[in-house]
Amino acid sequence: MAFIALGVTGGIGAYKAVEIARGLQKQGHEVVAIMSRSARRFVRPLTFEAITQREVISDLWKPGANARIEHIDIASTIDMLLVAPATANTIGKFAHGMADDFLTSMYLATTAPVVLAPAMNSNMFAHPAVVENLRLLTERGVRIVEPGSGYLACGWIGKGRLAEPEDVVLYVQGMLSADARHTLAGKRVLVTAGPTYEDIDPVRYIGNRSSGRMGVAIAAEAARRGASVTLVSGPGAVPAPANVTSVAVRSAGDMHAAVMSRAADHDLVVMAAAVADYTLSAAAQKIAKGDGPLTLTLERTRDILADLGALPTRANGRPVLVGFAAETHDVVAHARAKLTRKKIDLIVANDVSRADAGFEVDTNAVTIISPTAAEDVPLQSKAAVAARILDSAERVMSERLAGEVRS
Image (cartoon, rainbow, N blue to C red; front, side):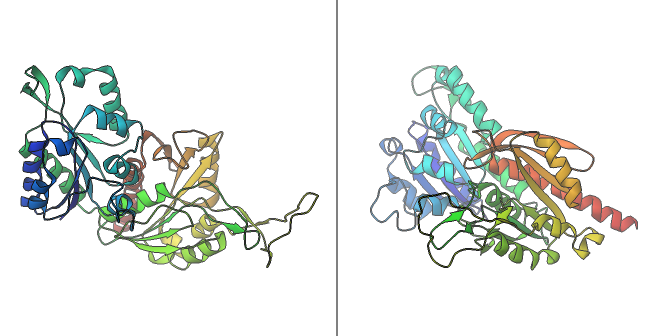
């Protein structure tokens, strides 16, 4: 069953979170409670510890908590982050990327599905700032359990009370059941992520700004769908999910070798890494600084995606190939040309000149292009974008399988 992080923030509905934790456990899920400082004013951590049989996490600065960078460690292993109650303050922090405690920091670090159950005064819930924050989060793939209407703790009557615990549990269970369909069960998926570093000498290198978040999100989503996943990631990439096979590489040559030696045995390859187009022969010793300019001679790297398109197994349509095109202008046109030139099935075009998409951010907006169509995916979390990319890849795989059956 699932491993769920239950975020509890500072509202009177925090007492209902205890029932939610118990309800999730009755469904067979493992729960860890993460409490904000304000939540501890309403419910004592000991209550959640007795229910979950796990230490409650509440302090980003607790001595020893950074031995494993705990908020990153948990973020990469949970199957879902559920925040109930979710206050206006926490919703605002999530929407605007503020990370000033354990819960908000973990939210930015996780690629797992996120569910919020808001609870607040009815006027607060209807305030344009809260409405806009919820809209932003929804566009990024966050799911919302609508609050109920009735008597509120403040004495008012209106919409804003935390949804009943059984309704929250049913909502979560429905999401997890959908994820549990395991549409990629029995399939082998290879994903690349992050940058490559091309060494100039033992000290310096040429690299790029890729964080690896998109590739890691795709790997995590493929694993959630039941696939056996291999993640080949360059240096500096975000940590790999716990349930995938991780292969660390440094240079474009390293990544070429790692991918080409494995690809033919896989059903799907998603090349999300930002692989260097040029490399050089590294000096054995650090190059001394001189008074004049320094000239470096760069050589083309092997084109991994083109070499994948030329694999003998591609005659039978295997593996299905998904490439990425990180562009700054004429994004879709350049991506279409790349799709045709490299003989692949799908290409994901994204405009990396945008501040809110592409490299080094948690959101992305892409166009998924096939030989016959193009699907615009609006700005949302990279986890949500990963799901859309895999939906498209699965359609290609299904069509190919149907063609094999007909033949």
